[in-house]
Amino acid sequence: AQSVTQLDSHVSVSEGTPVLLRCNYSSSYSPSLFWYVQHPNKGLQLLLKYTSAATLVKGINGFEAEFKKSETSFHLTKPSAHMSDAAEYFCVVSAFTGNQFYFGTGTSLTVIP
Amino acid sequence: NAGVTQTPKFRVLKTGQSMTLLCAQDMNHEYMYWYRQDPGMGLRLIHYSVGEGTTAKGEVPDGYNVSRLKKQNFLLGLESAAPSQTSVYFCASGTSGYNEQFFGPGTRLTVL
Image 1 (cartoon, chains in turn brown, red):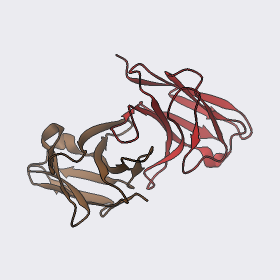
Image 2 (tube, helix red, strand yellow):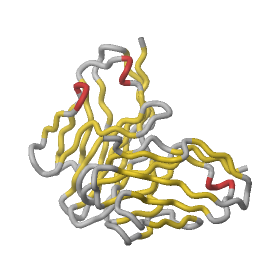
Image 3 (cartoon, one colour):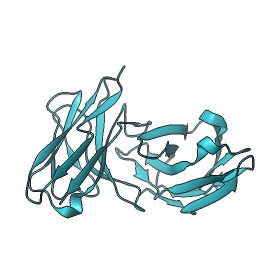
Image 4 (cartoon, helix red, strand yellow):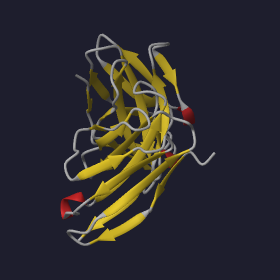
């Protein structure tokens, strides 16, 4: 079975400081992992994905995530937050043998000027 | 390419009314999905399809039906709307269940 836990429902950072959004997953098989971003009243946009290649994955807008199998984690980071990063972020897991995505409940990121 | 489009963008229904949401994709994807998004619950899968003519139940299928008569279209039906179906509905498509999904802009449905 697959599941995702996003450890923080809300994160606030000051503009220019680092961002850390935490995600732990559970998967019976080799997982694919994704981070999606949703700006207010918009659809979901893919930030980055891990599909069993390099464990450090770089995405759009300066975001990156590291797949740590031993910790079953896939945390999202960015060195310096920008006001435009304020949004809802979803961690997602799927499995090679499956047909479905499993979403976390989301982390709302606030960026303080 | 338009990507994934959804019709309508907004809709208000009265309890007991029926409606159909249309999702269309122009990327020749085999897999299509319908989700609902409610505050604090992330996205939950309603139904999905792994190819033309096929459908399967997701996590929250009750009260919904779907059809995939053409590869590019995936319809979500509500036969008798209930206030509990007030939500934002997202359609998505992808090449497999393992790879990324591409999302539509969403439909905001209110059932009074």
